[in-house]
Image (cartoon, rainbow, N blue to C red; front, side, top):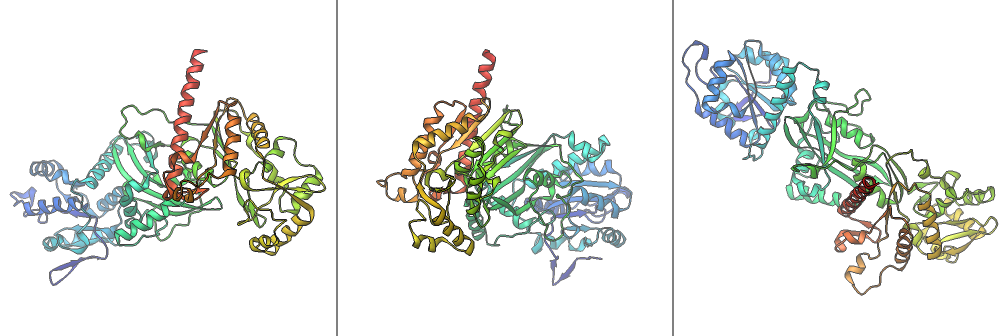
Length: 603
């Protein structure tokens, strides 16, 4: 069995100990309670309190009558420092097994103390990997390297385990099945997107969780290096992340989960997905996996659950914004039946936050296709879907540049009836030029990285610089042979296009349009530098059209950018900026909803 070994008065375990299970008679105290007098060991009680201050829990597994034991331990004051006390006359091995299942700890991180070698052997047999030891080691526990824990003078971890204990007792008393009990427990998951405010807790979840850490992508052990590494990833515009705080009718479990995903070409991949075992069997990880859209997840190493299974539908957890915590009268969260979003990476960043406000998001974003980036944020691909489509000759011309029939379609007008919200962004209209097919008259943008605002037909040097593949070189040759450069969209046509698009949406729907950013990092270094002229033109056109569409909300990134440190470049911002834009949009949408409610009441 896993009997703890001592060498030269030093105690060592294979991994950090998170829980000590105490026998009582001849272990925690001297003597046998049911056989007469005992000698109470106040030094052992002080050790339990000291360990609790380190975040290391203590439990009891004793063969005794519960009432006198509980009475005594309450009198001495140690009862409040013990979790999941198991006091009866049944065998200890199965009881410890059940205790660990309820608490959610692996046997390898638990130490069982008992003066009876038979009890130790049975417990180790029933719980493979359990650390067991005779009472002689108690004097060494305080200085053991694996029992140093982490400072917790406020006993927050003890409080959280006490909540879990009360919940387990209530479930047992009600005699209900686990899932049914969870449905009755009013479980709420609060998402904290401002991870930077709780950076150390996120690092702790990443580096210290094991049984429910599905990715095990660890940060550096050095705290400063870990903070710097996580801050960097959190700053990226392609990062989506959040901490999960859980409450139910039995208490507050604190921040028990963390996730971080990275987007490449608007496809999200999970980088961190980890949870504390204190909410084991509440299925928080299953709920979050579904909430994030069931992204590709391949668990690393042994884990206790499988959130990717299709066998369980978690319908007892209610998501909520973190701002609801502490609110005396939290307002109902703004919800929509459907959200539609068409645009670039700016909307991809925003939609992550708006997942709280709907169960259905339809995304039409930029993506790599046929060897080039397909820029859905240019209206040239949307207008045909609203005005009759392309004829055969135009389809053939589009195909010559790598575009297919589906690229000129949209689901924008196919949203089911209901309370719908539309997000639109047309940044590509500002600075990607149009080319006109000489035969069919098709007007279509063509763009490769590095060719912004430029006439690719006129500049052979630019074509050579930006073309990276034979396919791209072939299409550039086609562009020169079959098309003529028309240039950027001008303001009158922008106004006409945006009016057509907004008129195609239901009058009852809410619409959010993202303005283009007019000042990049260089503008903050030189305040006299003029604003970006093409972005100014786009924004003027949008503001002109919106005057006739009161249901449209404009979000200007500039309202949330305070300096060059907030930006990656003119069109890409640090992740917190998108969170500010989300809160701005949400505040305006909430005010709009209130106005609509007042108007309906007046009618």
